[in-house]
Structures are given as C-alpha cells and as structure tokens.
Image 1: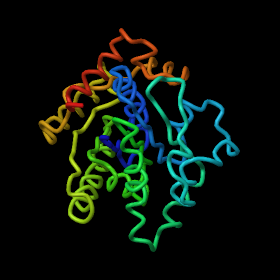
Image 2: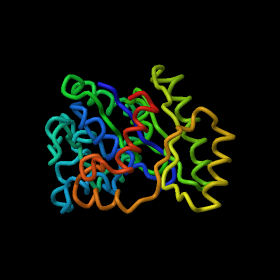
Image 3: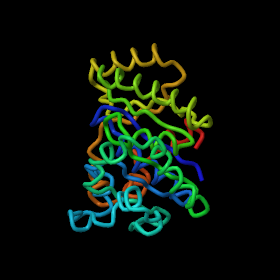
Length: 252
C-alpha cells in the first residue's frame, strides 16, 4: 500500500479536489483506494456522505484515533467501486489538545494504516489547512506527500513550512518520506496575474512543479455534488485527462 498525504497550510488551494480526483484515477485502473479525511470540516467526507450530520459523525475517524477502534470498524464503502472512506468528524478539531503532551501519538495513524495495508493499494490523506498534530500524523504515516498551490503568494509561503515539517519528520520518524511535487491548482488561463505567478513558481520550484496544472472549472464541483470524481462523472473530459496526466507526472 502506498500512502500519500495531500497537504498545505492554506485553505482553498484544492487539497480536497486533488485527493478526490486522484482517487478516481486510481480506481478506474482497478486499484483499491482508501480515503482518509483528517480535516474536521469534512469536505471530502461530504462528497461521499451527502447528508453528513453530527449524529452520523459518531463513528468517524476520531473513534479510531481517540478510542482505540480499528480503522476497519469506521471505514465506509462509497458508491464508487474500489474507493472506501475513513470519514472525518467534528471531534478532529480537538486533536491537538488531546495529544499535546504525548510524543508517541504522532505514530497512531501510521499504526492504524499499517494494519490495513493488505486491503488497499493506495491511501490518500486529505489534511487540514494548519500545522498541527493531524498534519504531523499524516507525514509520519505517509510514504509521500503532495503540496497543492493556488496562484497566491500566501500559498507559496505556507508550502515552505510544510517542507520544514517534512524534513523534521524524515530526521526523526519517517526516513522514507518522499516529495511527489507541487501541483498548481485553480489556474485561470486568461488571468495575467495567474500567468505571472506560474512563472514565479516555475522559477523557484523548477522540476518540483508538476507540468500538469489543474485549471479552475465548475466541472469539478458538479462531479463532487454527484459524489463522483471527474474521471467517472465526465470520463472523456479535459478535466479528467488532466488528472490522469497528473498521476503520470508523479509516476503513480
């Protein structure tokens, strides 16, 4: 099983869109995919559980992280063949206070996923937009990570903190952690400001910036509203082709 964390400290950069639609690429190939929603806002979970409520959150991810349940007890099938979900719940917003004095807690998610390794080919972790215990757990558990960037200077700045955290994780806990690259998302092709920022990212990140960009499109929102990745909602579309190309860029 290959575990990939999708992470940036800025919200709205396309983490959930990238997580959701990469899962679609892997699933259409026949790979078994586990989605792990570590963000208490539960945007990823809401795609697959449209009427998510606090009551339906009672058997979410914190039951495994806080209460010792196995992931298999909280993982839910989705309407999409080959994709399963470990859903978020509201109590994830307490993860920092719950584990603030427990150094070993960084390994909890890694241990949970290790027990599921035989059941899935890929795990994709959608991380919250802040540096805290959840991101630390994700980097310890992951084999690799992706940093989405919208074309905003703050997203670039936030990416540097992720790289610093990843380097500390390599030294202290996970020597195998690799960087798959930066992904420019929500790109507006006709925006001069977007083109200037793309040039800035190409200059500063060179080969680490993946050549496939994820352009802004209402199609992604339409697909999510139907509970499907773009590869299954509009399989022959430009948007679906972009995600297949992105997976190839990262050799996934």
